[in-house]
Image 1 (tube, one colour):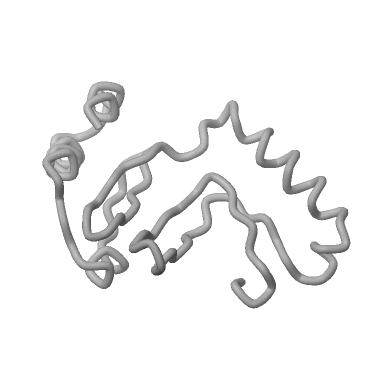
Image 2: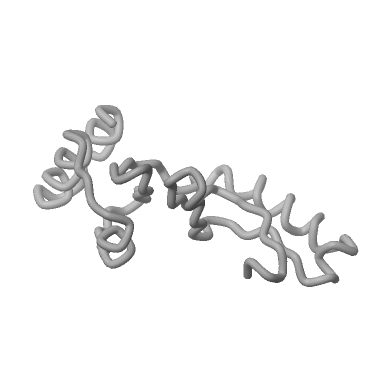
Length: 112
């Protein structure tokens, strides 16, 4: 988390305070997290068993990796059956008390 604050020197003081509160172990329920909408460019927030954690969004220079994976996957029978690979999709992993936004994830037709 320290690196997130140091690397984001161009953020506002409000954003800096928000990041500092997360670094200090900001906690909330999943219901609160789902309605909480902080916006700090380049940073995504995830919920892990009540604690808020931060991650970076996919970097511009890394997008081609996800794009190549999705383009190749879209040529498969699995894709034709309605399943998908999605970038930066919200994923509720209730079984492990986690709500994430991974760089890419596989979702079945039923999950979409």
